[in-house]
Image 1 (cartoon, rainbow, N blue to C red):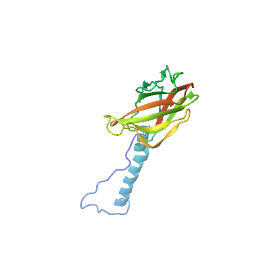
Image 2 (cartoon, rainbow, N blue to C red):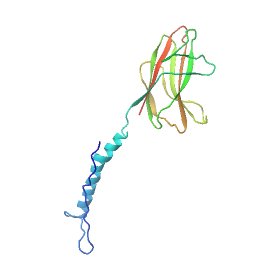
Image 3 (cartoon, one colour):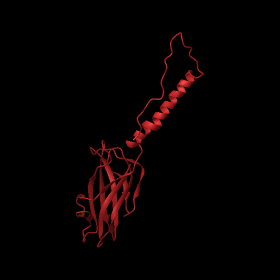
Length: 191
Protein backbone atom coordinates (compact mmCIF):
# COMPACT_ATOMS: atom_id res chain seq x y z
CA UNK A 1 0.00 0.00 0.00
CA UNK A 2 1.35 3.47 -0.84
CA UNK A 3 2.46 5.70 1.99
CA UNK A 4 0.26 8.61 3.03
CA UNK A 5 0.83 11.74 0.98
CA UNK A 6 2.43 14.65 2.78
CA UNK A 7 2.98 17.78 0.64
CA UNK A 8 6.59 18.87 0.41
CA UNK A 9 6.12 22.15 -1.46
CA UNK A 10 4.82 25.17 0.37
CA UNK A 11 4.37 28.49 -1.41
CA UNK A 12 5.39 31.67 0.40
CA UNK A 13 3.19 34.55 -0.74
CA UNK A 14 4.75 37.53 -2.40
CA UNK A 15 3.46 40.92 -1.33
CA UNK A 16 2.75 43.59 -3.95
CA UNK A 17 5.17 46.53 -3.97
CA UNK A 18 7.32 44.83 -1.30
CA UNK A 19 8.83 41.80 -3.10
CA UNK A 20 10.54 41.99 -6.40
CA UNK A 21 9.78 38.88 -8.46
CA UNK A 22 12.79 37.41 -10.27
CA UNK A 23 13.61 34.29 -12.24
CA UNK A 24 16.87 33.26 -10.55
CA UNK A 25 17.99 32.89 -6.99
CA UNK A 26 16.87 30.81 -4.02
CA UNK A 27 13.36 32.29 -3.97
CA UNK A 28 13.07 32.94 -7.74
CA UNK A 29 10.40 31.64 -10.10
CA UNK A 30 12.72 28.97 -11.55
CA UNK A 31 13.48 27.54 -8.12
CA UNK A 32 9.80 27.47 -7.12
CA UNK A 33 8.70 25.80 -10.37
CA UNK A 34 11.44 23.15 -9.99
CA UNK A 35 10.13 22.47 -6.47
CA UNK A 36 6.64 21.99 -7.98
CA UNK A 37 8.08 19.60 -10.60
CA UNK A 38 9.72 17.55 -7.87
CA UNK A 39 6.44 17.48 -5.91
CA UNK A 40 4.47 16.17 -8.94
CA UNK A 41 7.16 13.59 -9.79
CA UNK A 42 7.05 12.31 -6.21
CA UNK A 43 3.25 12.12 -6.32
CA UNK A 44 3.35 10.07 -9.52
CA UNK A 45 6.09 7.69 -8.37
CA UNK A 46 5.09 7.19 -4.74
CA UNK A 47 1.32 7.72 -4.71
CA UNK A 48 -0.56 7.62 -8.01
CA UNK A 49 1.29 4.87 -9.92
CA UNK A 50 1.24 2.35 -7.02
CA UNK A 51 -2.51 2.89 -6.63
CA UNK A 52 -3.11 2.39 -10.36
CA UNK A 53 -1.08 -0.83 -10.20
CA UNK A 54 -3.14 -2.10 -7.24
CA UNK A 55 -6.39 -1.30 -9.06
CA UNK A 56 -5.37 -3.42 -12.04
CA UNK A 57 -3.68 -0.82 -14.21
CA UNK A 58 -0.90 -3.28 -14.95
CA UNK A 59 -2.41 -6.06 -17.05
CA UNK A 60 -2.40 -9.38 -15.22
CA UNK A 61 -3.21 -12.63 -17.01
CA UNK A 62 -6.34 -14.32 -15.68
CA UNK A 63 -8.00 -17.59 -16.69
CA UNK A 64 -11.59 -18.67 -17.17
CA UNK A 65 -11.68 -22.48 -16.91
CA UNK A 66 -14.87 -24.14 -18.13
CA UNK A 67 -16.19 -27.68 -18.08
CA UNK A 68 -18.11 -28.00 -21.36
CA UNK A 69 -21.89 -28.00 -20.81
CA UNK A 70 -23.04 -28.10 -24.42
CA UNK A 71 -26.37 -27.50 -26.10
CA UNK A 72 -27.04 -29.38 -29.37
CA UNK A 73 -26.19 -27.41 -32.50
CA UNK A 74 -29.40 -27.73 -34.51
CA UNK A 75 -29.91 -31.01 -36.34
CA UNK A 76 -26.22 -31.99 -36.13
CA UNK A 77 -25.26 -35.00 -33.96
CA UNK A 78 -24.84 -33.91 -30.31
CA UNK A 79 -22.19 -34.67 -27.70
CA UNK A 80 -23.02 -36.96 -24.78
CA UNK A 81 -22.93 -34.81 -21.66
CA UNK A 82 -21.04 -36.13 -18.63
CA UNK A 83 -20.63 -34.63 -15.17
CA UNK A 84 -17.26 -33.06 -15.93
CA UNK A 85 -16.78 -33.57 -19.68
CA UNK A 86 -18.45 -34.18 -23.03
CA UNK A 87 -17.92 -37.30 -25.14
CA UNK A 88 -18.62 -38.16 -28.76
CA UNK A 89 -21.20 -40.96 -28.93
CA UNK A 90 -19.57 -44.31 -29.86
CA UNK A 91 -21.58 -44.92 -33.04
CA UNK A 92 -21.24 -41.34 -34.37
CA UNK A 93 -18.48 -40.04 -36.64
CA UNK A 94 -19.10 -36.46 -35.50
CA UNK A 95 -20.56 -34.38 -32.66
CA UNK A 96 -21.34 -30.66 -32.32
CA UNK A 97 -22.45 -28.30 -29.57
CA UNK A 98 -22.21 -24.81 -28.18
CA UNK A 99 -22.20 -23.01 -24.85
CA UNK A 100 -22.47 -19.44 -23.58
CA UNK A 101 -19.32 -17.73 -22.25
CA UNK A 102 -19.21 -14.66 -19.99
CA UNK A 103 -15.93 -12.74 -19.74
CA UNK A 104 -15.35 -9.30 -18.17
CA UNK A 105 -16.09 -6.41 -20.51
CA UNK A 106 -13.08 -4.87 -22.25
CA UNK A 107 -10.55 -7.62 -21.51
CA UNK A 108 -8.17 -8.83 -24.19
CA UNK A 109 -8.25 -12.55 -25.01
CA UNK A 110 -4.74 -14.01 -25.07
CA UNK A 111 -5.20 -17.74 -25.72
CA UNK A 112 -7.49 -20.76 -25.79
CA UNK A 113 -6.54 -24.12 -24.24
CA UNK A 114 -8.55 -27.33 -24.73
CA UNK A 115 -7.92 -30.53 -22.74
CA UNK A 116 -9.26 -34.00 -23.51
CA UNK A 117 -8.36 -36.99 -25.63
CA UNK A 118 -9.18 -38.23 -29.11
CA UNK A 119 -8.25 -41.22 -31.18
CA UNK A 120 -9.32 -39.93 -34.60
CA UNK A 121 -10.94 -37.02 -36.42
CA UNK A 122 -10.61 -33.25 -36.37
CA UNK A 123 -11.60 -31.42 -33.20
CA UNK A 124 -12.39 -27.71 -33.54
CA UNK A 125 -13.07 -25.43 -30.58
CA UNK A 126 -13.80 -21.79 -31.36
CA UNK A 127 -14.55 -18.77 -29.19
CA UNK A 128 -17.02 -16.69 -31.21
CA UNK A 129 -19.09 -13.55 -30.86
CA UNK A 130 -22.23 -12.27 -32.47
CA UNK A 131 -23.91 -8.88 -32.25
CA UNK A 132 -26.58 -8.66 -29.56
CA UNK A 133 -29.38 -8.02 -32.06
CA UNK A 134 -28.08 -10.46 -34.70
CA UNK A 135 -27.15 -7.58 -37.02
CA UNK A 136 -24.20 -8.00 -39.31
CA UNK A 137 -22.66 -11.00 -41.01
CA UNK A 138 -23.23 -13.64 -38.32
CA UNK A 139 -20.95 -15.23 -35.77
CA UNK A 140 -17.38 -13.95 -35.84
CA UNK A 141 -14.60 -16.36 -34.77
CA UNK A 142 -12.20 -14.80 -32.25
CA UNK A 143 -9.77 -17.68 -31.58
CA UNK A 144 -9.82 -21.33 -32.71
CA UNK A 145 -7.99 -24.38 -31.37
CA UNK A 146 -7.56 -27.70 -33.18
CA UNK A 147 -5.09 -29.15 -30.65
CA UNK A 148 -5.39 -30.68 -27.20
CA UNK A 149 -3.20 -29.68 -24.28
CA UNK A 150 -1.43 -26.72 -25.90
CA UNK A 151 -2.69 -23.12 -25.69
CA UNK A 152 -3.41 -21.45 -29.03
CA UNK A 153 -2.70 -17.70 -29.01
CA UNK A 154 -5.30 -15.23 -30.24
CA UNK A 155 -4.23 -13.32 -33.33
CA UNK A 156 -4.30 -9.52 -33.03
CA UNK A 157 -6.15 -7.48 -30.41
CA UNK A 158 -9.18 -9.63 -29.52
CA UNK A 159 -11.35 -7.61 -27.10
CA UNK A 160 -14.51 -8.67 -25.29
CA UNK A 161 -17.31 -6.17 -26.00
CA UNK A 162 -20.32 -7.09 -23.85
CA UNK A 163 -22.34 -3.98 -24.73
CA UNK A 164 -22.54 -4.87 -28.41
CA UNK A 165 -21.79 -8.63 -28.56
CA UNK A 166 -22.58 -11.98 -26.94
CA UNK A 167 -19.83 -14.59 -26.70
CA UNK A 168 -19.96 -18.37 -26.97
CA UNK A 169 -17.92 -21.50 -27.68
CA UNK A 170 -18.58 -24.02 -30.44
CA UNK A 171 -17.08 -27.48 -30.04
CA UNK A 172 -17.16 -29.98 -32.89
CA UNK A 173 -15.50 -33.19 -34.00
CA UNK A 174 -15.69 -34.59 -37.55
CA UNK A 175 -14.23 -37.65 -39.25
CA UNK A 176 -14.05 -39.66 -36.03
CA UNK A 177 -15.93 -42.88 -36.88
CA UNK A 178 -15.39 -45.58 -34.25
CA UNK A 179 -12.98 -43.33 -32.35
CA UNK A 180 -13.21 -42.01 -28.81
CA UNK A 181 -13.19 -38.25 -28.22
CA UNK A 182 -13.61 -36.48 -24.89
CA UNK A 183 -13.30 -32.78 -24.03
CA UNK A 184 -12.59 -32.17 -20.34
CA UNK A 185 -11.99 -28.45 -20.17
CA UNK A 186 -11.72 -25.23 -22.14
CA UNK A 187 -9.57 -22.48 -20.64
CA UNK A 188 -9.53 -18.89 -21.90
CA UNK A 189 -6.58 -16.73 -20.84
CA UNK A 190 -7.23 -12.98 -20.83
CA UNK A 191 -5.90 -9.69 -19.46
